[in-house]
Image 1 (cartoon, rainbow, N blue to C red):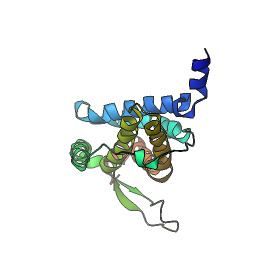
Image 2 (tube, rainbow, N blue to C red; image 1 turned 120 degrees about the horizontal axis):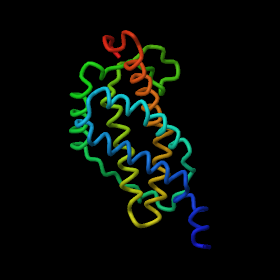
Image 3 (cartoon, rainbow, N blue to C red; image 1 turned 180 degrees about the horizontal axis):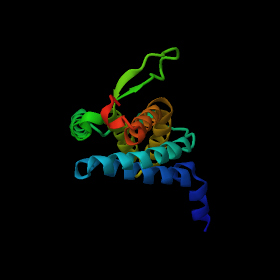
Length: 181
């Protein structure tokens, strides 16, 4: 009983982390099999999983790491490129969307983005998180949670928001299927 209580109080294996792992795993598994789904089913999945992913990532605890060198990356450039090309082919006419660059504080000019590129970038960050967390030593789990929270705050959180907007526009705008989004 004492051991179970310690696990619940340990931030590296907290309920919030385990829920993030579950949602990230669902996302990655679906994206890896994207070619098996029709376009509308694919977009409807994104419509549902991205807000959940955003929520779960926003709840990740702050994690102190004892060895920053324990961070590892697993998704190679070749794997990223292959997935990106597969998604770009799937999305064809609905791949491009417009967004404002969040890094440029005074930017008011929209920039063209690619749903395929954003989805692949999110996938890379989440797959690296999942694979690093699976390693047996605690230091790897700490780094996985720490890095995922940091990347959510600085990178994939923005991507999720942008893709949610693009997918929403495509699914609900009367001209969405014929527009540049």
